Image 1 (cartoon, one colour):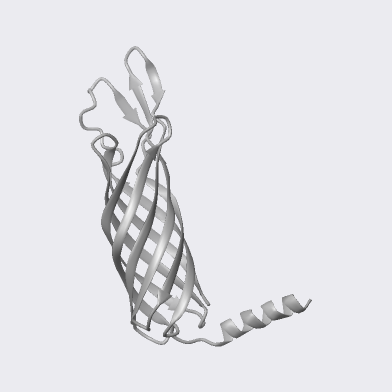
Image 2: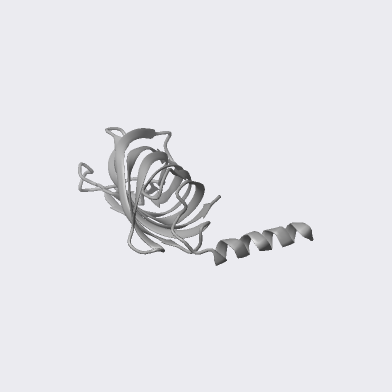
Amino acid sequence: MRNYAKLFLYILLCYTTVSQASAESLYIAIDVGQTSASKACYTDGIPGSITVTGCKEKATLFRVSGGYQFDPLWGAEISYGDYGKGKLGTATVPGLGVINLGDWQFIGFEIAGTATFPYSDAFSLTGKIGFAQTTIKFTRISMSATSTNLAYGIGAQYTLSHCIAIRAQFENLGVVGDNNTGTAKLVLLSAGIISRF
């Protein structure tokens, strides 16, 4: 019973102390959203007799991050993301019929410096720049490629209390893949919750 009382007191303290993010704080964040893999369905070079349908360039992402706010303006963050799985569709090949091409999947790590620009006591604009190491994998064939790119993003953050905030972000992770897997430009749109401690 005492543990529940302590938890309730902690939550109450968080939600009754509404202020801008503390000058120095560790935090964890969970984001969900949409991955857009531009040109993942690129079909140039495929003979005209073969028809490809059902390919999708969008997927659902899930990401966990940890960070440190050095002062109210500057910070750093590291994250691991499952950027989702999308269908490559099916190919109709004369003489062979319909072939399931399988799925593509992106996963990766990102490390970035962050900037927070307060607009009011609770609302801030945010930016980030760093490096993303992203791997593309295919489900039906044993093929993958890992790319390391400059990554950047912009967003907005709303502080609910000194230990809870919500955020939304747009990020560009660059072009992922190689000549064997093909390449796609990876863009993320996400929303998440931040817990400071």
